[in-house]
Image 1: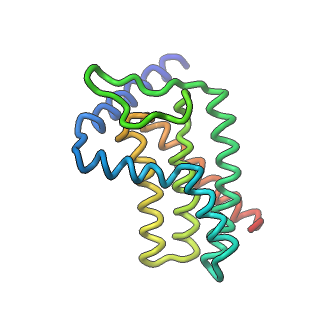
Image 2: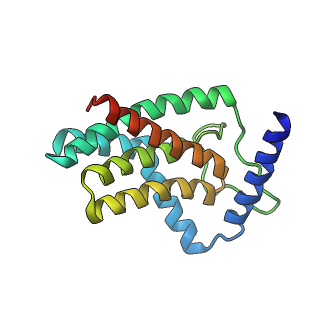
Image 3: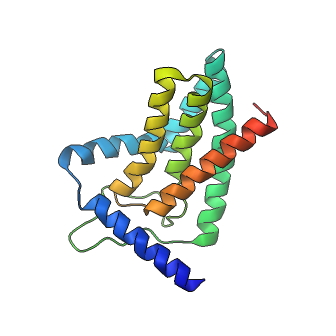
Length: 175
C-alpha cells in the first residue's frame, strides 16, 4: 500500500508543478476570485437563497445543492482529520497564492462545494445558466491547484464526493 501511495503522491506532485509553473498574472487574479466562490461565506448564503427565495426548478436546484453541500462538507471534514494529508510543498521559488483555511489537503472542500452547487443547477435549470454553473463549479476545483494549495487528486476526490452526495440526495428525494 505504501508503494501505491508514494506513486500517487509522485504523480500528484508532477501534475501540481505543471499547474503552478504555468501561472500568468491574469490567471492569478482570476483564480483568486474564482476560488472564493467555494468559500463557505459565499456558497452557503447563495445556496440557501436559491433554495428558499427562488421558484420552480431553481428552487429545486438550491434544495439539492443545500443538502449535498451539507453532506459533502461533513464528509470533507471527517476525511481531512482522518487522512491528515499536508498541504502541498512547492518547489523553490514558488509559493501558495492564498493562505489555506486549514493545514490539511485531502479532499478539497472548495472543489466539493463548487460542484455540489454547480451540478444541481445543471440538472434542474439546464441551458446556458446550468452550463455556466457547472463550469464555475469545476473551475473552483482547478483554482485550488493553480493557487498551489491542493494536489490534483485532492480536487478529484472533492469532485467525486460532490457527485456522490448530489446523487445520494436525488436518490433519497430529500429536497
